[in-house]
Image (cartoon, rainbow, N blue to C red; front, top):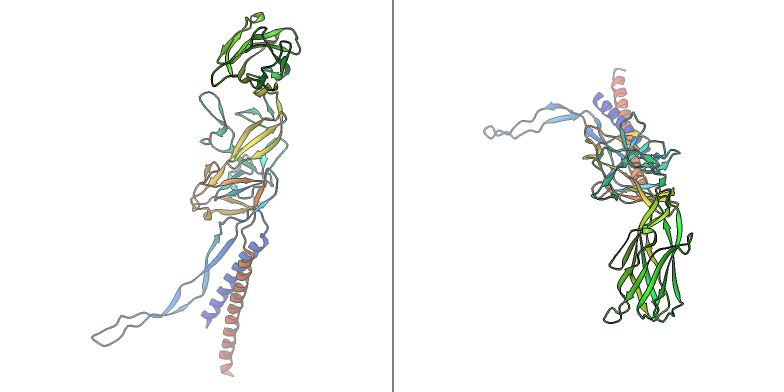
Length: 444
């Protein structure tokens, strides 16, 4: 009878552990990125009262099965339920969830190893570190790929070891709070010049030019009919700050016959004053503009006239496209599905700042919980592989958070089953106790 009591005790102990697991799951029903667990049982060894025997046809004896009495139960496993939780929209640009099996890579401090989490409640501290809600640093890549001619604006070198992300500065890009100015190098015109304009009708096209320091300079291209010509027009460029000083001038000739009548046929350029270098190719005029000779503040700009037309319609010539901009300060951030954090600057420009890394594991269910919604790798999870967000480890969804994957209906059902199991095992113990009491009473 002691076997039944010990079996009942093991049942009480194991059902209590299962209730502890269920209680923890329910407690974390609203914990961001929480992964529930499941306790499973197995029987312990059985005591064999009689071994099995084989049938004997010569003696006419049938086979006998073994006779065994079980010794109770024990814990088989506490499994991590690594399913995705529902996604909640937060409209916070630094909140991120993962569609897939990956985890964010974080570091508690510079001396600690990597830990991993599904909770994407990120923020930026005063020095620009991308951090979790507990202050751990989010890791990724900050060195951009270098192409043949220029930096690939949307690519990062993911072959490097991941490192804590700083949105304000890093060793590869320097100060990221400021975006450097870009000098104007191209201006594209579009629209129509009225073919019925008189000699004294001048079409003025205003524009902004940016020098290498990011200073803005106002300028204007003036276009007027050449005396005695029907399809030939004079153009000239002047700075508003230096009126009367023509930087570049020449003539535009529009086609008068054929399918492309009214479109540019050819262009000429006059000898520029001041000896500035000028080139003309296929409807484009390239000229050097000197803003400050003492400071060597000079830019080279290509003016593209190809989209201009000469029809009997209102004047509509204007700047269609241009480059160049002043410096700007970082004012906002956004995180894309590919993990790239893009900075938005006060001058309206954008620049990639870093890429968030995801950790991929061969067996994510083998991860070890270490609190704070974090995991560490174990011998059975395998070492993590840092990968960019993609279809392998998952994609990111900004402005959202992954909720707990706890299923309350299942937890309440398991709670009832566990309570009944605990109750039944307690009955085994009390019944065995009553039987032992009857045995003791036999001597009376």
